[in-house]
Length: 404
Ligand code: PLP
Image 1 (cartoon, rainbow, N blue to C red):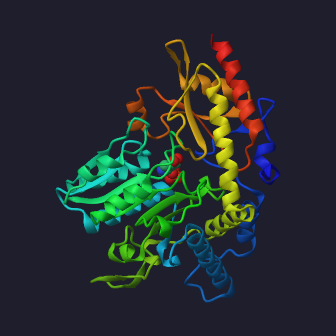
Image 2 (image 1 turned 45 degrees about the horizontal axis):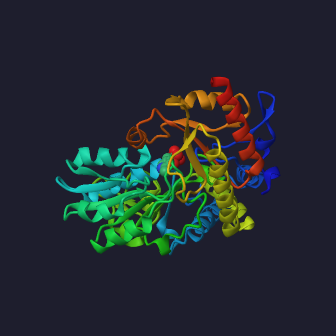
Image 3 (image 1 turned 60 degrees about the vertical axis):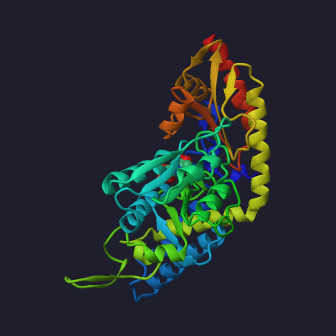
């Protein structure tokens, strides 16, 4: 699919054509997104919302149109439910603070799963420390999938929120979040979905999912860095206090008392990234122009091909082999009983022009559970193809031969 739209992909590394398979960390950016950003900087650059002059009003229109675009892309009921943040981590921190202030007291419980990214652990842990609440951990079953049967017994009358990833950033596996949401809602518990790895690959619809909160990052979706989304159902966002104070988020400020702005501005203190929002909208247009279902089908086939080809290398051990994945496959290389350190594999692949990610992938509790120092993760995007996977496997075979 449309490799030429991504200038970075025609670069070479150590004199070899780049094979970029680190898309779960960040995607490459299409020309259309960068051009939208440049256009906004060159021709529509003025601070938004408070200006009476033409340029400010035009920039405001563009920013709010981008919000509408995101709402439409994620299937939100209204653009009031879309809060622009700096990324998934920022969204989760904002939510943990705001939800925690309003809803969590001493002795209450928050549930996350064992496979979460640190961003979906630490903010909740900090909240629990602040409020003397307890962080509970949903276990995984034998196939490294969130064990939904354990959820019912983990939920108590003190549970205030469940927060889980829709796609594991380590394993690439699609998690049964629909079931998690159903079980939690049956007990009147709201659910936050970490969609950082889902939104780039799956046709997510927050209304169909019926999640209460959903977070994602633009830079993993062909959009700009420093831009993310916190989606919340309007009824929830209305109930929660702002996470930060400052300009934009207020209605009136008096030394005695400040009143807050309406949604979504109540959660957007300070000058928002009105350039990034336009660029993000352009990235979403780019995906939609290709067709989200077509992108999903293409990537699904490529992910399966990558797993098959890697599995054909005898020294490779794939984690969650055979499970349905979205974009990423994690593995380690064994020579007999000996695990070759993932950093060594990553370095030898890099020297052959193949970029993958190695290490704990910001999910140390899962890596500890797997009992390894880390994994090698190859992750695809819509511009990768079979030849990239073939180059990965050739380079891997050569690396293994060098190490034996
Ligand atoms: N959650 C998951 C599942 C992720 O994969 C990532 C990033 O890799 C994050 C959260 C954090 O995203 P960001 O660094 O864009 O804030």
